[in-house]
Length: 255
Image (cartoon, rainbow, N blue to C red):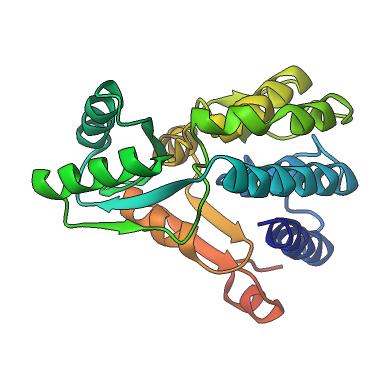
């Protein structure tokens, strides 16, 4: 986490800058990023400079590493159930003093990630399987990311955030926390303040962009996970993963 997060940010911004160099007249109508990817989206929207984003992401990685060491937790992907079904089980388990467990990511219909303390996570996973989940897969992570547990270790991250220069986004950016547009520097700061302790509302974010008229999505970063999620959210729109120089050749862009 400590080294991976800055590396992922750097890769995605390298892809973005390459795209901007090749197609200087093309401007995105809106942008969004999933969890860590939100920092790349903020750079794309000119709300953060790359150096400021990198500094924040380094502190974010350090904070998450410390959280995993001091207050171990975990995450699990739940396949085949809806968000309300998963949330009901999380609320039941959390109310039984098993510890806390929460919905962390609403990735797409039928794919929800939960996050929490280890005992609660195990109990919730068992009950979700009994409810009819197609599969519950523990993630190889010892951190309860995107849950209130993270708040105990965020003091230094919050200090870094206070020292960060944040500008008004120059293009709309849909935030993870509320799946709504971040319109001001204050909106961005509030988003980053809450992001690690809040659910990533990815399905809602994509639907917000589609409702705003977006029909073509470019995934700038390693892999094509988000393009796959996009297909499961709405097959009427098109997504293109862009992560290497060769991938630019597949884009439907003609000059």
